[in-house]
Each structure stands twice: as structure tokens, then as C-alpha cells.
Image 1 (tube, rainbow, N blue to C red):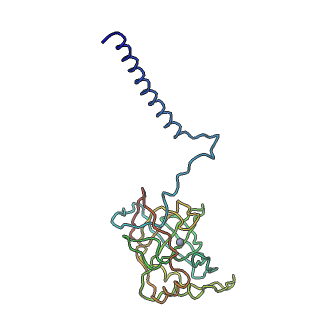
Image 2: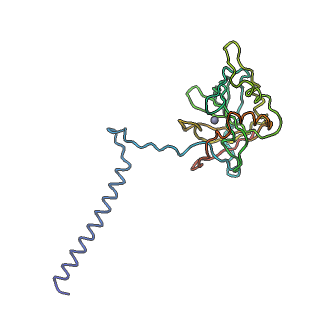
Image 3: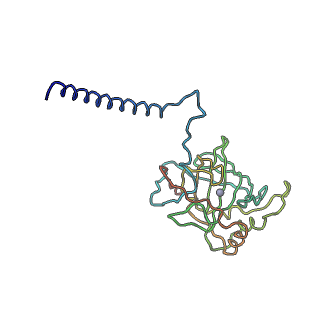
Amino acid sequence: MNFNSVKKIIIIAVVLHSTFLFSQISTAADIHAANHFDYQHQENWQFLSGMHQSPINIDTKLASIMKDKGDITLYYSDFAKFENNNGHSIQVDDSGFAVLNGRNFELQQFHFHSPSEHTINGKDYPLEVHFVNKSQSGRIAVVSVFFKEGQHNKGFQDVLDNIGRKTTEDKPIHIDVNDMLPLNLTYYHYLGSLTTPPLIENVEWYVLANPQEISAQQLASFHKYYNGNNRKINPLGDRIVLLHRQ
Ligand SMILES: [Zn+2]
């Protein structure tokens, strides 16, 4: 090897080494740029959303026992203010309150989905009611009850009988709400979203484990209005489902 050959090799080595260094520097710069929040251009900040949506399938074998005391108490009124066929469900505007894991919520409304939106171990139910509750600070918590086919349900019949009925403030609708709630309030809890637009996240879900019953005739009556107003299942992702027995 002559002197020129050695010089060439040295030059090649230097070029290769500096290319390697440059690639390392540019990779570091990219990472820095990706993590950098520019406070002068906050409109360009990326929102990570859509990862915690509802409904979900609840795999009961994967549920963790809740460490909180967790008890829930529901005091829903049998006298509803307004019932409305709103174009995507039958909705009843009701009052009353719920104590959920030591915190106070007020009932806003309840409405129905057929078939159920949540599934348990991959199985759906013919009907699911969502009791939508709100805390003083605006947090939303939904208490959900499944219905299976069986006995006639007095509360659900009250809902069916009042579809389209005009209501006045002095004459509220009587609905036997408690007939739609199981005596045992054991539930699955997870953090999800509304299941209709705007699909807002950070909604607390309390999916009651024990279904209530409705008759085949009642289900057929509801299907005259809605049959298939259920949003598809969303992936659980990094979320945990808790089980609270009470
Ligand atoms: Zn709903």
C-alpha cells in the first residue's frame, strides 16, 4: 500500500465517521422537535384522543377487584319531567341523585339501546338502559343496566306507554324507575366516553352485572322505534376494568 492509498482510506474513514455523527445528531434533533411544545403556536399542538372510547366488551376474567370502598346508591325519581323520541333513542328526562363511590351525582336523563352497546364476554343483551348522571363540577357518570328476555317489566312498560305523550310541569310522567334497577348493584367500572357524538371521553361507566328482565312483547314494541341503535365495540387498549361486588 502506497502513501496515496493510505490517504484515501483515511479520507473515506473520516467521511464515513462524520456521516455517522451527523445522522446521530439529526436523529436527536428530530426527537427534540417532536417533543417540543411551541407556546407561540399552541393551535398546532396534537391532541391524543379516541383511545378511551365506549362501549367496550367486558372480559369478566380480566376484571380487577376494586380497592376503593366503591358502594353506589341510586335515588332516582319515579316522576319524570319529559319523554322524547329524539331520533336516536327514546329519552326520559328525569331527576334524582346517585352516590357513586362516595361522590354525589344528579340524574339528568335515561335512554335505551337495542341491542346492548356493552357486551359481557363477547355476548350482547337485547336491551341496555343508560342512566346519565352529572356531578356538581360537570363530570359525567353513566349507570348502565342490561335487560334479558323474560318477565314483563313495569318500569319499561311505563316508558313504552308514554312515547309521544305531551307532558306539562304540573303533570309529570309516572315511571316505575326502580323496576329497571336490579336489587344487587354489583358493577363493572371503567373510564370511557359518551357513545353518541360528541363522544366526549373521561366518562365514568358503572355497568351493572345483574340484568333485569323485559318480555318478548315489550322488546318487539321498542323495536318498532329502534332496533340497532348501538355503537360498535371499541378496543379496551391500556384501560383496566374494575369489579365491585355489593
Ligand atoms: Zn346511551
